[in-house]
Amino acid sequence: MRIAIVTAWYPNKNNPLYGIFIQNQVHALAEHCSVCVLLLKWSLVPYQRKRKEGNVTIIEKGDFYFPNASETMLNFWASRYVRFFKSIHEEFAFDLIHAHDHYGAFVSDKLKNELSIPYVCTIHNSTIMNDSLVEWKKAYLPRILTNADSVISVGQKLAQTLNKKYHITGVKVIPNYIDTDVFSLKPTKAEEDFKFLFVGGLEAHKGVFELVKAFHLSRFSETSLHIVGTGILEKEIKAYVLKNNLENSVILHGEILNHKLSKIYNASNVYVSVSEYETFGVTILEAMACGLPVLYSDSGGPNDFVQPFVGIKLHDRSIETISNGLIEIQARYSSFDSRKIRDFVVENYGSDKVIGRLLKEYKEVLDAKN
Image (tube, rainbow, N blue to C red):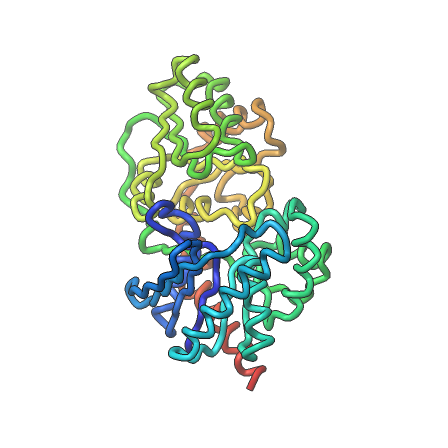
């Protein structure tokens, strides 16, 4: 099976975490089939580069196109992508396209019409789930997804939105892939201060500023809050930490590369997610794979996999509610079974399950074509 990955999201030197969940999935797929990732990058000077990432072939094309500010401009971008794809297809003879997000589906829809190559599309977009997609994108979404041979959502709530809002039927729910060898349970933590952990963008919808204020309100002793990530709220959070003398208890680590995150998880006691919305919640599952209990908000995606034995669900995202949740989960910490939390992730979200389901979906699509 020769699979082409069509995506606008993929890690690069300037942003090594951009689309890391796609890169992780691609590498796991490459253990079972031939996988080639096609990346179109903006450049005034055309170029083409080919490299290997383990078993994965990455082909990057630099080309000029306009920002995707209208469907006309998007069509211009897609025409460049189609031309690029065709030149690579001559060598690779792809059996199937796996598109990620609606931009990938937009290109793949054109490729299917021109080359009769079937395509599977995985939708990750929070803008679809929270209905903030701009109107002209809402207009083309039903067309390109109806033409897909299979539509996959990373979470139930996102799948329900695709069905109710866009009338896309038969959406399969297949979660993001978690490498449970990288994110694993390590020996018992040393008896030091109790550590809460947040990993993600420092953005308003993630609720990280509310989390810092809630931690401050809780007046913990021998307890710290560790924040991994960067974003527009970073300066404001740092100023709040300094103003309130929290430098020794609220630690901002900045951005940490994915393969180094397991060490941070393993040094922590509880993972906290207080997002307004999440289509999935990769970092929550990574933390669970490391045996951490979770304090989380009703943001959508995590409802699929955070079981009662894993942690505590907040009934709202107010600072007082988050503060009470932090206090409660610390008090109940010894009642959570790290091994049980870890085993649940391995059994339900490990490679055999997630990658196995994707391969099964590919086979069904190709069998239907033949």
